Amino acid sequence: MIVIYITFPDKKEAQSVSRVLLEKKLIACSNIYSFDSSYWWKNQIKTKQEFAMIAKTTQEKYESVKQEVERSHSYDIPCITYWKANANKKYIDWMKRCVNEGSFD
Image 1 (cartoon, helix red, strand yellow):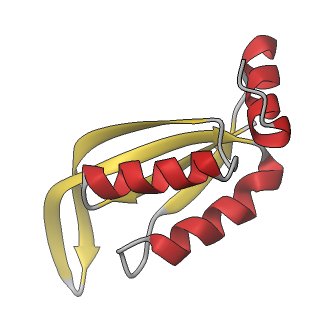
Image 2 (cartoon, rainbow, N blue to C red; image 1 turned 180 degrees about the vertical axis):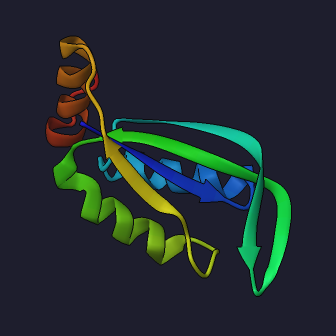
């Protein structure tokens, strides 16, 4: 299992991308939350509100998720990172069924 972290400029875009990834069965679920972000952009430090999506899926789906996000994201350089995660067996089994078989219960 991997967890993918993606930032967005607003909640609407995060929800839209999440919906597409779910419909294409590239992720099993996502969580979206807001936060204040500070970062370098064009030789200046910027601070603004952003939204992050945390999506759960399999390692095999990462490249497809990354391509879909890069295709539709409004940022010039979107943040698309992932890390490997462990979870309880029932959750991992459910997540794999969602992205591999399309079984949702």
